[in-house]
Image 1 (spheres, rainbow, N blue to C red):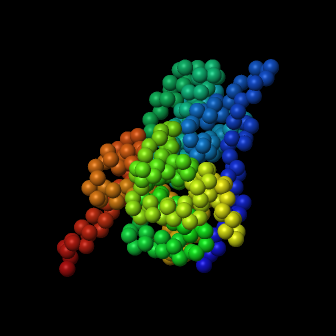
Image 2 (cartoon, rainbow, N blue to C red):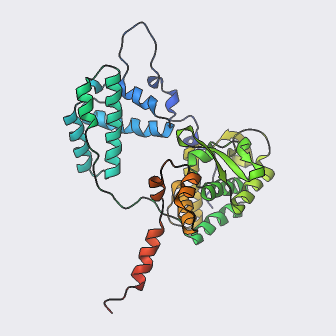
Image 3 (spheres, rainbow, N blue to C red):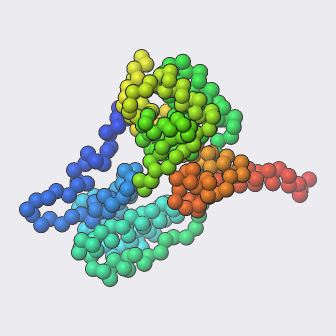
Length: 330
């Protein structure tokens, strides 16, 4: 069995943190150095993960514009023909439509900041804002796990007699049973467990709080983790465990969740899946049980049912069943 530990430096909660980068925070001084519009745009984003993603995208665009990096790019000189050329080049290099449109959204956001900082005239900004998103779609990413793979995944967690087994089983059960994002799962504290309602107080995107009601199986695994291993000490709900079963009060990171699932799926011998596939599995199962879209939207913390519909994987099984019933050539 592959050994899982939380001592991997890749799981350092401060590694790659944008908050540790002084370039993200404009310094007050006696000079009149202009604020970088790209940095201002990144600071306007609510999610650290969004900031990280958009910073990467803008770095690529800066290179395409010959600037080298985000900080040396003259964003105030950006014009409509630059933006249209970038989107075409991105599409030609194989980026999918949704990804190209995300780049376009970032560029429009930077242009708005440049205009607000008086580094771009209003006409140039309006011309950039008028650039239309690319049209088209691709097959949805990810998958919903079938019941046999879910059973195999939890079987390997429960077969692990170390402290890691109950923690991993509880964490994956909460993500799957409540449809949480991995950032929401690691953001939970012990105080967020609402015992009387058998629910979790979850802080989601846009700083919006919701109650996630926990199914029986997930609740039992969560109680085993708290009562038998973690204890009642205030702090993060899901914590790092060092070698020899040393349970800490250090919060797990997003990357740790991904790492744990990758190891467990390898042990279970199931197909590749990501933490977000557990969220897709939750949505598909809820809809398959007859729950309406509004209920599923609220449970997942979505702002729109359109987003929720993208998580529905029932159509794939229906198409496979229709294929198996079709008999035209024999």
